[in-house]
Length: 160
Image (cartoon, rainbow, N blue to C red):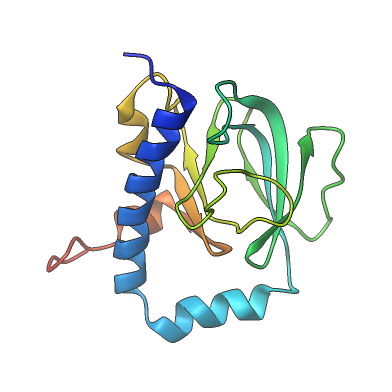
């Protein structure tokens, strides 16, 4: 079953909201909030060579670079058009992974000035709902959670 971009992003919002709830519940409040505030002017995170799939488009934007500083998306553009800061933490997409907006990004876009709530998927979410079962990572208010951290988050009432 092929899903539209809007359907895919809608499902991503629900999946991401569940992920945010799990991660948020498992971390001390000071750690989550303090980390974002402390990093607001610090080292940027760069998502390099991803397919960006905003909620308002049917077609993914291929080979994109997304620069995040603090909890805000700072720059977005094609590979080769965006200068990657030397001190940036790079998350490589290899041209086949997808970035979709998370639920706190109320505009459903991935563009400069929007909140850095992103879900990293290894499959095209328009092709299968399975893409949302095991996200490769998520950025919540500018803080990166890789697959190991997501998988280590205990289910409600469970152990990691």
